[in-house]
Image 1: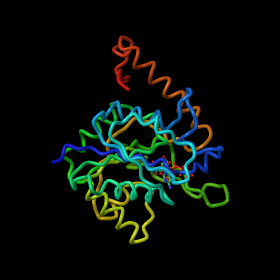
Image 2: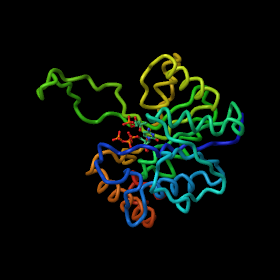
Image 3: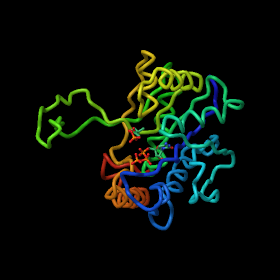
Image 4: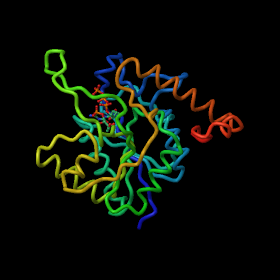
Amino acid sequence: MSETTWLVVPAAGQGRRMGAEIPKQYLTIDTRPVLAHTLDRLLQAFPASRLCLCLDIEDRCFDPAWVPFADWRRAPGGAERVDSVIHALEAIAGEAADDDLVLVHDAARPCVTVEDLRRLEACLAEDPVGGLLATRVADTVKRDDGEGRVAATQPRDGLWHALTPQGFRYDLLCRALRHARASGIAVTDEASAVEALGLSPRLVVGRRDNLKITHPEDLGLAALVLSAQRQSAQQPAAQAASPSAKASI
Ligand SMILES: Nc1ccn([C@@H]2O[C@H](COP(=O)(O)OP(=O)(O)OP(=O)(O)O)[C@@H](O)[C@H]2O)c(=O)n1
Ligand SMILES: C[C@](O)(CO)[C@H](O)COP(=O)(O)O
């Protein structure tokens, strides 16, 4: 099994639901752009990994000074997230081995913890399919009737929220995403492309605060989460008294 872990970070979205003047990955939290926070977490977890960053070819905000990795390259963004990820896989084609692990992580998820990142990588090290961080759905789930009223309450047993990173071997991920695109299957994450090949990615329980900044209120939530995570990392003595808290971020 290969020892190389690749990181693919799609950061070529426009942030339409955020509705800001610049793409959400460039909005700042504590004076640093979301993208820089995300890359810092990835570096802490995987200092020796190789990075491919997907950026819009018309991007006017990106600053390479935010990339803390020694070994990194960029790939052009595509129309959809899946297209950006395919471009990244094409960009590393000459360098990646078929069995290299590729972890795809949204630029818009800066709150992923180092502990979750490392645990995911460890869980996937020997997994024949690959998998993703995920959390169980905790709320009652409704389906609407299209007119703002409830049509049905959905059973939530067995339902999960898909988070990122999602990790698969290079060869399998290329096959899965190309198959999805060629078959016209709309995929919003890597796992669903792998599922379309008839495989079952592994669900690795992640933290609920690994939120994706999507809507305006998410930016403030992410700032609070990052601050709380920093505080809990600085208070190892208090952590010991609280079995559910974790000292490392
Ligand atoms: N064509 C795209 C679309 C999305 N992304 C990236 O994929 C991640 C998750 O996508 P999402 O939250 O949907 O981001 P946006 O597409 O920017 O948001 P929106 O759908 O609201 O426009 C983000 O880091 C985003 O930058 C990408 O690289 N290329
Ligand atoms: C990949 C993802 O983060 C999993 O939750 C998510 O699907 C990406 O966001 P999008 O809104 O579906 O593009």
